[in-house]
Length: 389
Image 1 (cartoon, rainbow, N blue to C red):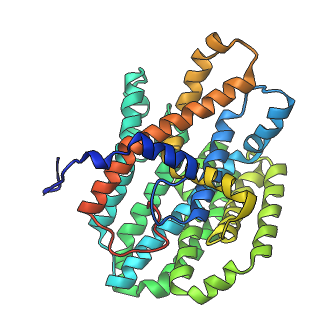
Image 2: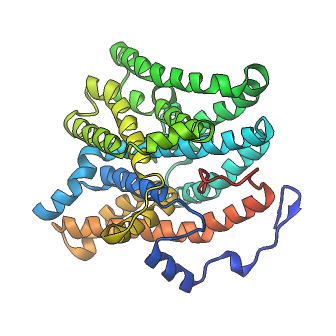
């Protein structure tokens, strides 16, 4: 395989054996040197997002109770992803700036492309093969502008566009920030400014008659969560003593997280309060969860469920891409095999099908490509904050 002028050998060792896959399923580990708490957060986030889209069938009283969190607050999973993403990608950028004084934007961009596009384009090609018109989704998602272009299919991928637009601006602006103003002095104030500005823009948009969907998905309304994540990474790397003190306030973060969940549970996100303040409460709750779980040692009876969540977190990107498609296919074809009125079984099979496809995509596409990426565009330095970024 020839890529970017460097010859890369494809070895059978790049693809996991079935024995390795079985070990992965048992121990919840797809990679070395990972931070368990961050993968657990990813797992919680993808379960919330999946729950918001999948937990609709009448599964009976017991299962309906288990599915209720996804129905009520599953939409907040995207803010958990945003905060975590900002924390990891921001940490990568700041660590490079600490080492070199700036950012190699070409390497940053190519690493993002190789991280996202192979798995994404596999999904987009599959949509074409299943008969979805390319004009409804392909170019919009390929250019990461689906929110502004009003994609008609795969609308759940709006959050990918928000992330990539934010990182495009951050990556392009960072060298200018470094040379002209000094990133250490200005970056935190810019991030705080975005955190303050976004709810003001949401309030203005709400009063101006923007639809709830636009306020929910358009980048200029939603990047406060990503800015919060980058700000946390700035504190972790530039103010480590302060960050460690913040990590020590576990009871405070548990209380903030609990109060945030209560608010989100009781305030409808489509209401004016929900779309203005609720989105801020969502990322604030997510930040509290990150500070609560980061570097947290897990022992005893919590270890197994945390490993399961970490495993889901490690396949979260293809899960995010595929779960709505699996839902549509399951609703169309499964009732003929399992019978009508079996909502609990239908939902379970859709979850299992989504996990199986995501596991396959991770092991056959995502992981091998990331190995090649690290050979061609190696990260500038090792960082505990960079976990599959």
